[in-house]
Length: 199
Image 1 (spheres, rainbow, N blue to C red):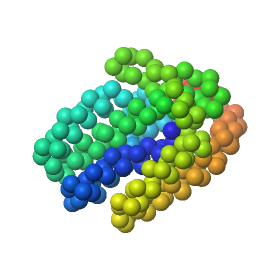
Image 2: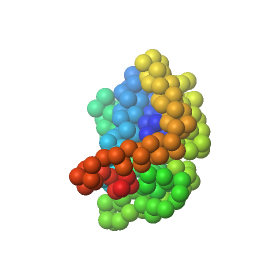
Image 3: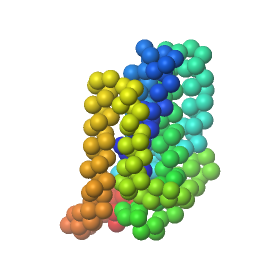
Image 4: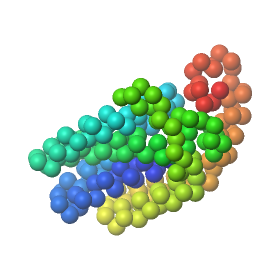
């Protein structure tokens, strides 16, 4: 799934705070957003392996969530929502396409690396590829309740995220072609520094 979908999913995890601890909701939404974002910081170096930890983020999220429930504070809520967002992102990538430049071709058997089992988890392809129509639909569906729950400036963040998602979805297949064309123009000396899917 595309990054906008992940960050909105991370934000939506904080929705219960609006009812139970409204004073902590903004930090929860922000932490969920950042947790949904964090795993993709490995986009160009070991993508879906370096910062994707489906088992470990999930395991760490359990005590962090318990701490936030038992002693709610800005810190405990932020840590819990960050870890929950990162865990959801890492697990959700299993249900998308494989790790390749053109995931709609379905040639990759790698979705996310499981550090606990030391092996790649195969893609389930429920969402065919990042930026597919169904990915955009999920992103919009996640945004709707968020727009009802958050105020400015988080509302603008949600709207901006959906705009980025829509543009990305429209351009996704073209971006793969552009990347492939640009990579051919690079000097051979840069090949070792390119992600495997670009070679």
